[in-house]
Image (cartoon, rainbow, N blue to C red; front, side):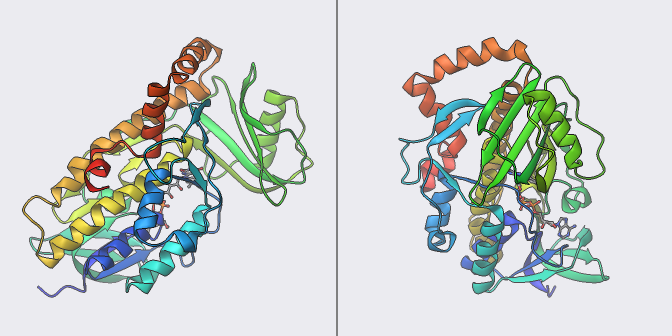
Length: 380
Ligand SMILES: Cc1cc2nc3c(=O)[nH]c(=O)nc-3n(C[C@H](O)[C@H](O)[C@H](O)COP(=O)(O)OP(=O)(O)OC[C@H]3O[C@@H](n4cnc5c(N)ncnc54)[C@H](O)[C@@H]3O)c2cc1C
């Protein structure tokens, strides 16, 4: 069977782009198909953790990312957690916008020979013994030895391959907005009687606000909330009026927690949000996905070169699925501590006392930073 390429990656988000570059580094041909005609320009994740920085360093991407000085002040469920002092040159938190990460990864991957075809939506796939046939909008068909779904939380690849996505439906939601022209105090996970509020002034004078009302269920949403809804909730929780501000970006996110039952079905694999959906608390969502791609890329490249030892490709799922399950669990724990009503305050107090003990701090900090996985200990 002659295929069009060895690997098709669905989705040119950060995970698909990192995977494409890793596949090229391993000598595999790759075509990335991306539904969007142009790269996304909306603000999303902005936190890069130590393990991801180690990966960027290994790939020679640090200079292009020009990361700002690190911070060490992280949190666990809104309880202060110092992420410094861990066994990594990059211990701490690095603030880089997802837009910049995607721009740098796209340039790097295409520079290595990955082909990115934009404005192509994967609409279906069929697995055969020795190849996968992919249907694209257009319509167009492509054949490849393997297909990897890096097509985000609503993954078409996952559905087409019949992979289950079990977990917990959302019961909590946060509203957020980037707002220009307001002058309010910075608030780091401040708990008020009615809810939680976060305000962070960013360079350029834009303030990101995030707010949750204790006990409120997620709204039924067909799109992002109106700024008026965010401003009203902000006023209810904090007593501050932000209606005079100009919203630049408004968004709602919830505590959905789901994981694919398998990360591989024969010639189809999943990585990133396609494999796990989680609340983006503590900036772990993006990092978890990038670390999936780094684990999978060289293994899949070796497989298509015909040089992989038996079972190597299966270690992707056996290593990364337990890591994902553990991260999802810590995110769920954090969501309860962060967004739980005043009844969780005693648990918060006890945890804050425990975090004061250095072994506890290091344990949680290594978990959040992605430094405590067996693969990282093995491969460095
Ligand atoms: C509004 C928003 C805010 C977020 N905020 C944070 C945050 O503050 N911190 C944090 O850590 N994480 C945050 N996240 C999550 C973070 O952005 C994701 O974890 C990260 O983008 C996952 O990367 P990915 O490449 O797996 O998926 P995505 O970034 O979702 O990329 C998937 C790509 O696949 C494409 N695609 C989808 N379906 C198809 C198809 N059928 N065919 C072809 N292409 C397809 C999409 O257009 C997209 O480009 C946020 C996400 C969103 C949406």
